[in-house]
Image (cartoon, rainbow, N blue to C red):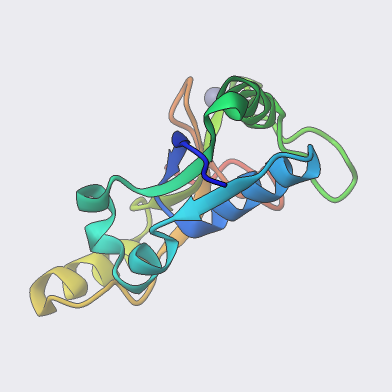
Length: 146
Ligand SMILES: [Zn+2]
């Protein structure tokens, strides 16, 4: 038995890809994650490989894309099941795990990494609003100092 697999989504890291895979499998869909181990070992090759890919059977592709889009459109909630929204404009559309460069520690870590050709030893992860570019803390939804 053979299947024609088609790529329905691509991600920078395997974490998000595995979340989507679990979501699709929860809807009784057979799916596979490709190139996750290569990109986890060396994230710098992510663009060269086309990212971590989610592949499904060709007949399931349309339904998989619909399920993935519904998952992407679901707003994040905090521990109290309240929707996390931008403290500046109220938008629920934002980048998660955005590497902030707005504090001195992040800038210093970047410069050290740049000059010594190593991975940054410190990266501050924040949420960044797609509407107004406000960066805010994931747990507290508190607006960070610009
Ligand atoms: Zn905003």
